[in-house]
Length: 148
Image 1 (tube, rainbow, N blue to C red):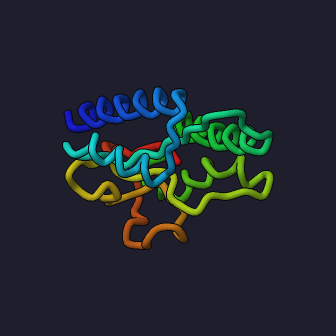
Image 2: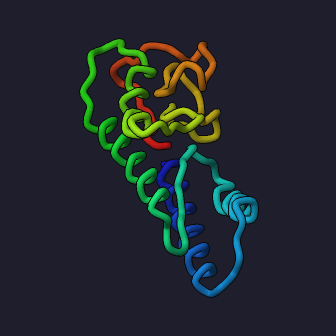
């Protein structure tokens, strides 16, 4: 139920953000993060969302599309038991790698509320971007986020 409450809080924040941007209020990443903390006081899961207000450049469209392509690849893969998360991570990064781009954080990790949002035992991450101690094999019944 925590994830549902968190989703509702996030949607309320998004609605406020969009309304105020359209009304001309200036937001920064810091002011948005501070405001979002107020909405999510009942706990949180780690999510990554990108908002763009205005007209995106061709480069922004391409990179956003390539990230989406990687997420779709990851969402559609079936893998054998006991595969390491770093192998799945490579699937998500492949569309960016094709054009020499990358991101410097994990692709997915455990889902938690009131705990560490990066709890293991496993993660979907390149071993260089996460401590080795979380580089465990994935097992049936584990749940992970799928997002960058």
